[in-house]
Every structure is written in structure tokens, then in C-alpha cells.
Image (tube, rainbow, N blue to C red; front, side):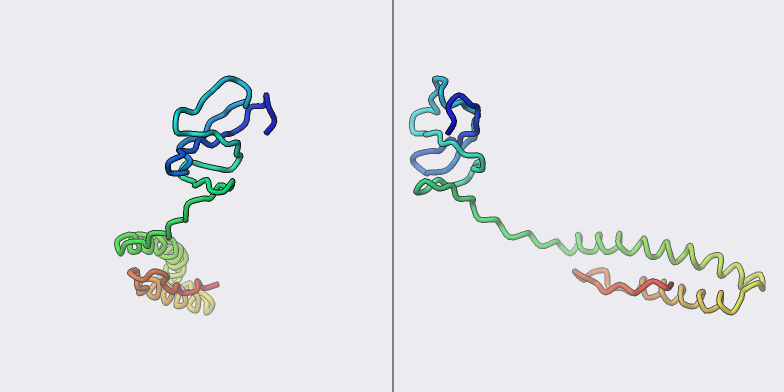
Length: 138
């Protein structure tokens, strides 16, 4: 502790040894955290931490909440829309070339590849947590 310099202090409830607040204090100015509480200088402690045997202990981290079926479906539907749009942008001019009798052999190969890709993207099971997405044609 450096007296006279404003620092972070953890306010600890002496009945529970839990940090209930964090305050800035210079360690010199007259101040009292209140009956049943002490102030310990700490740059790391946060509300909810425990103070035990001179150490601050962070509370256990709760495991992440798994997404709901609706959230998975929504995320996968959103993820699907970009490849579908890319496929449509690639297919339209290739199909125009076919319709106008101007398609090259390369155009026909690419048109088939993009259409196959678009069908496969549409067939992805959007209910799965980590679906396998098809590889975009190059």
C-alpha cells in the first residue's frame, strides 16, 4: 500500500468474507467502510469474490448455457443465407449465358457446380449444433 495515493480497495463483509463493493481510497483520508466491513487494498478483487487467508478468490465461472433449439436454428439459417446469396449471384449470369446460347464448356461446368452447391447448402440440417457446410466452388 502506498499511502496518499488513490488505489482500489475491496470492501469485505466480515460475516461472509465476500467482497461487497470496491472503492477508491488514498489509505490516509479518514474513512470507515462501516461496521462489520473492512477495506483491503486490491487491484484485482471484484464484487462477489471471497477473501480468505489474505487471498482474494474469484467465484467459480458458471458453465456456458447451451443454445436452445430455436437459437441454433436461427443462427444456422442466418449462416446459410450468405452462401445461398453467393450461389445465386454466380448462377444467374451463367444461366443467362446458357439461355442465350452463349455458354462455354467452362460456363456449363461452373453452372453445374454452383447449382449442386446451392442444393447441398439447402439440404444442410439447420437443427444441428455444428452442421457440415459444403465447400463453395472455385
